[in-house]
Length: 393
Ligand SMILES: Cc1cc2nc3c(=O)[nH]c(=O)nc-3n(C[C@H](O)[C@H](O)[C@H](O)COP(=O)(O)OP(=O)(O)OC[C@H]3O[C@@H](n4cnc5c(N)ncnc54)[C@H](O)[C@@H]3O)c2cc1C
Image (cartoon, rainbow, N blue to C red; front, side, top):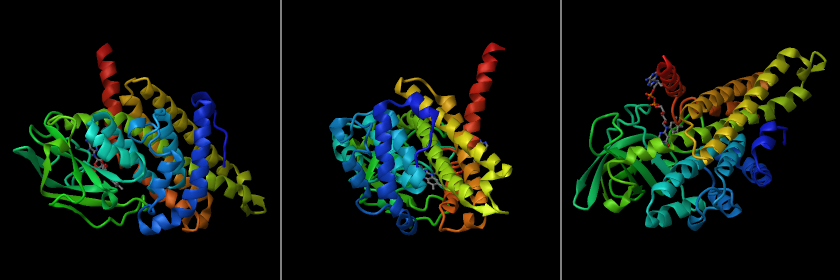
């Protein structure tokens, strides 16, 4: 359903609005009927990514010479919102493939790496993973226990990563290791591109999880995996810079996904409230239901306005570190609250799997944890705010 949003006419070009409408049609006609299958099978069906690649809605902002369309960053945010509106799990697969792995390859890869790894991702011919989190803790991202040491013109990787999105379907992995230096230091990290059949690499069984059931997640083990030095992404010892450099935009794209989830909550709850009669009246006529709808719609519009604003700032190269953390924090809370209220508005039906409200309720929660928890976003926001006041004191 098309709903009015002032943010759209304020921030999007006519071309981007047309692109959004095409993406929306694709999600409604092609992706929506596949959602029950994806939720049951735990991964997207064969050929879906390829079809998106062929339709030109996958690698939109990636360079044309490597299978992208050279379009605005906004097109990626639009795809994130529209995909998450239909399936937050499928959005997670695209998020990792395109917003994370492809973006890092486009920025830091050599020509050979882009040809071999970026092109198939941009065209939907492959999936990939980003391996950062480890069993001892994901928030402390610069303290991996996964290490690599040099052996001639090769490197040997040893360690264990967990919660890795796409691992069961990935053709290759971007693996963040510590190669020198101390925990929590930016210097001394190295990022390797490791192919799925590298000897010593094992992928665990997919996790059975509360959220994002359409997206496969597993552990990945590296038992003395040897990779040639040409498989380093960027420079040795500078791998954590890749990670830090991409974090703000990652959170902005997360904001787009969260907005999609919250919008989906409105999509299910409002028609239901208009239709459902209790005590002889549609429940939409009751003020306690109107209060919920008002809060949900407000959260959606503010989240959308903020992510559009930050995408445009990123396109201009502006530093959005504090604001991206605010968006990630706020929009994930909006999505969680909207999903809770959607279930409430549907009453008992909200708890039944035949309506999307139950899935939205499960999926929204992920976004207060994945890609940096709410507590970590608050640390970033408060640190920067305190710094600003200290400077004037
Ligand atoms: C479905 C799913 C998919 C994922 N996909 C990927 C992926 O593809 N690649 C990848 O690398 N990772 C992935 N992750 C991991 C995700 O990024 C981590 O779960 C997240 O960063 C938190 O790490 P943790 O789970 O180890 O929690 P911990 O870091 O152990 O934190 C536990 C709790 O302590 C809090 N906490 C930690 N430090 C502080 C502090 N200083 N102050 C206050 N509170 C604090 C946290 O906010 C949290 O509430 C995924 C996770 C999930 C659930």
